Length: 394
Ligand code: BGC
Image (cartoon, rainbow, N blue to C red; front, side, top):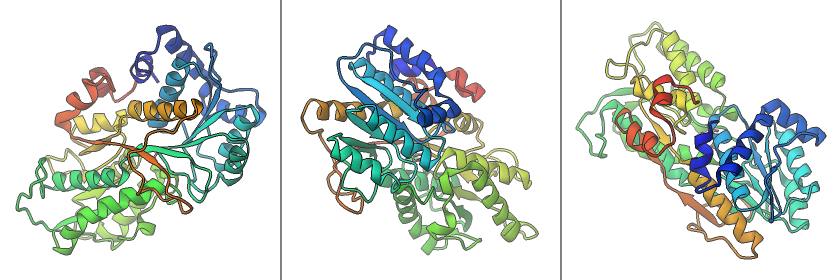
């Protein structure tokens, strides 16, 4: 991840500290992080001078650039605030993440910021943290089935799902970009994808999307020819691009190939899945741009490869969740705990983790279409115009 991200993320971070964070990132390949977690020999612990204590930051994977950006932004911001940071990525492997958090506790972490792989798999670590009086902040994904989660920072995940469905309806021409109905009634053939069933967010995205699409499904404006309309059928374990590609290919083979039906749109909850779905469509003869009739595919995260596809009118839209703002909230919450106060929540009703309602701070997200890439992503410094043009982060 590039230096400019650190600068933007760390809101005012001193140059020297940002550069230190940058150089620390080199140690953060999946393999090295994983090895480090197991052996305790390799980590991205801060070399910045720290007056505060050690904060453990557990991120799920480096295969998706958003988590790298999240990890880097949290690390840089905490270092700027004077804390020492142990940032680990777990290669989407549940036991690895458990070991990493165990190690953070052993190493004397005074607070933990955790984006869980499986929201239910960290029970013993959370018990140990609670016994040691370590506050736990659930980062973006809610940790479930435990009393020992103190705070949750995330986006309004239901609203993200609403936005995904809205962008699909815009792509089909049923709504305009102001959300007004155009009078277009289809019928349009759509297929539905959901995220990983062990990620609490996936059901929020799904519920927001399906409740938005339901009136159009009921009216017959939208049809799901595969008949696969249940979350369980649509879910893609670990948010894997290849799994989404395979499922889309299976649906095309079973339902579309050899018929005169065509796919008009696909609800996809994450850019990685969207790219797998687009590849499956292209492998089956769909070509060109959305304006030319390529199916409208939604997304999430504004990953650079997808932003380029949107600029090229191949993927229709994505949802931008500014990881810099999320990181800043996580840092604010951590500091509050370490200073002996309570972080400020703006939602104390929606995020029941099965044991308790976790006080939460929710941020807002935006729909990205080709025509607002510049205002949302380039002007805010999230991506440069060159990165959007190349589809690769510098
Ligand atoms: C996050 C999404 C992300 C997905 C896959 C979810 O928990 O909220 O932003 O697309 O995980 O990494």
